[in-house]
Each structure stands twice: as C-alpha cells, then as structure tokens.
Length: 347
Image 1 (cartoon, rainbow, N blue to C red):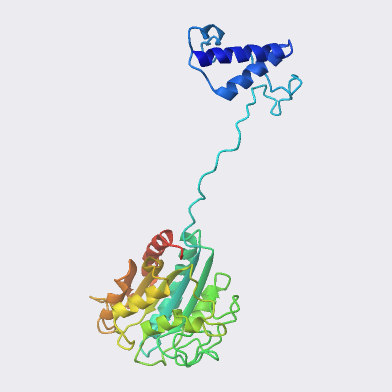
Image 2 (image 1 turned 90 degrees about the vertical axis):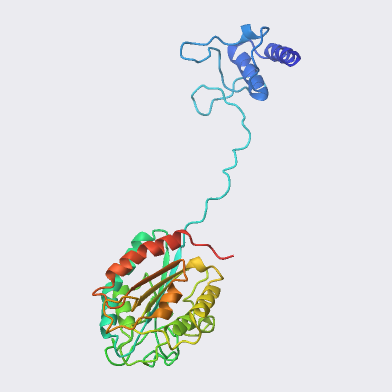
C-alpha cells in the first residue's frame, strides 16, 4: 500500500509538471508504468484503472514519448502506439550447432592382380551413380577429394610416384588398364575433386589393369595412402587427406588379405589413429568375397577384411561378384549420410 501511494504521488507530480494538453499527461503516465511495471489493483487505485471493454482491451489514452521540454516526440513507426525503452536487444543465445561434415575424402583401393578385369569394369560403370548420389544426399558437403591406389607398388604410375605403395594413381599402364595419363586434375594435385569431370577422370584412374602383384596388400596400401609420410609437401598424396573431412575407404578385391603386415585389430587401430582417434569419422566399404559368396569359385572369402570392416560403426560388406556394384553403393549412401550427420569435428 505504501508503494502504491508513493507511485500515485509521483504520478500526480509528473502530471502537474507537464503541459495541459492530453498528450503530455498520457506520456508521463506511460513513462511511470514502463519504469515500474504493472501494480496489482487495490481498492484505493481501482478507480484510476481503465475500464475493460467487451474485447478484453483496456480503455485509456496513449501517446508518443515526450522530449525534455514536454512536447510529444515523433512516433517513428507512425502507428500512434506507446514507445517504451526496453533496453538492449535480448541475446540471441548460443551459436547454432555446426553443420554435418562439410568435406568428404574417398579413397578407392583397387586390386590390380590378374583376375580383376571384370571387377574394375564394374567399378567404373557403377561409380558415376555413386558419386552423384553422394552429392545429392550430402547436401551440406561442400568438397570432395577422390583418390585411387592399387594393391601393390604400382609401376604404371606417373613419376615420381611409380613403384610407391599407396601413391595416388594419376597414370596407368599394363594389361587391361586405361593405359593413359588421367590428369591434370583441377586441384593441381594428384587427387580428383567435384570440379573435375569425375566420370572420365575416375574411369581412367580406376582401370589400373591386371599386371599387378598377386600378393595383394590392400590394407597396407590404404594405410600408406592415408598416412603422414605421403602427405608431406611434394609427396605423392599431398593435400589429399583432411583432418576435418569424413573418410570413406572403399576396398575392392577378390582375394583374402594375406599380404599386409599385421592383423585386423592392428589395421583398425592404425586407421582410427590417423583420424584423430574418432572411429565414427570413418566409413569402410568392402567389395570382397564375403561369407556365402555368389561366386565362390571366382572369389576367395576375405575373412580378415570382413573382420576389419565389422569393427567400424559405419562398415558395409558387398559382393565382389555382383553383376553391378550400383545396388551396394546405393545402400552405402545411407551409411555415409548417417556418418556425416554424426561427424565429430576434430579438436
């Protein structure tokens, strides 16, 4: 009650100090109300409250703010309503969550032994649809890096990377290969990007031919390709691997993995370490001879690669002898998309 009485007194003094026109009195009243908030009605001040209308509004006089001399200031909006000083604009809150992965690195490890001609042809035919679906599904992805390595020290490669295990292929040679130089790539490096004519460039690089070593080393080649040694300035894979990119590793072979040193847990641990210890930032796709293969006589069951791929949250296994790889790649898009949505930025 004491507070209400004091406010009434203040209001009376303010009204008497203003000009006699209605706008001045209303402005002073508005200033008081805006400064202290709405008081609960009492019997003493009930008569000063506006009369409710049938629509629930309260009748009363409103006006613009006043200048120091008591005159009404212009209403900048022109709607005639009261303009109260509400202070600073409320904080917009924390920054939005970062988008899903913005970058994707795809490494294809292609067996180049003597039995792989049909599989390489299949890969080349299936790739355009695969990369198109990636670009359509991963709408936030802004950049692709795409590279190809063989399963041996590829002798057909461009100097100085010929005979380098894990060196990205930019030139092919040998039986059933594209037998041509596949660059230059827009990146100026030894990998392709979304800015290249991918159907043409990838078809060239992926047809590594069938003159390679029969002692395939797909996992050792992958780890070398993704490791720090070949990523150094001037080296074969400079700029290919990015710390802040989702890694998609695609292994294509019709043999068991007997050539690489180590075992599946060793390969798993080394690959995860190369991606900063974040296992879920890796997708592993294996087109191999799985258990219960469609063509047991033409593809060896790759038990060790199966064990490796199944260690990953985002790992998929497909039939190397399938008539087309397109269905496998189509299903893999959902796996890649989920991994991208759950990508954990490094650091």
